[in-house]
Length: 148
Image (tube, rainbow, N blue to C red):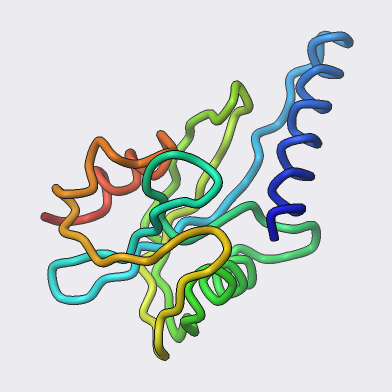
């Protein structure tokens, strides 16, 4: 899993460099973000590879729909199965100088959550996570779509 993250960062930086050399605008990386609720709390990850909290989700793969990416990412990062999802909206941001577009979903899950290589899972009230998120897109998704 860590190799995939390193490969994604390497690809992003290489693409960014080539775009600057050839004066081409680089398209954003497209990702999915899951808002998983339990009563008034949401599921977060204390990230293992970066300081701060994250929301379950990640970059879409080639030929993968947003729904497929969402199910895959939720399973990989939480061990939970996404049984239904509702598209809430999109968040435009950047990460490491690379433009990002995150598709945000409200996700219903089943199963028992288990920590992954990407981080330890914890349920928090949204206000207790604000200001602690590692990605600007996650911070924006939380403030726009998590009803306090």
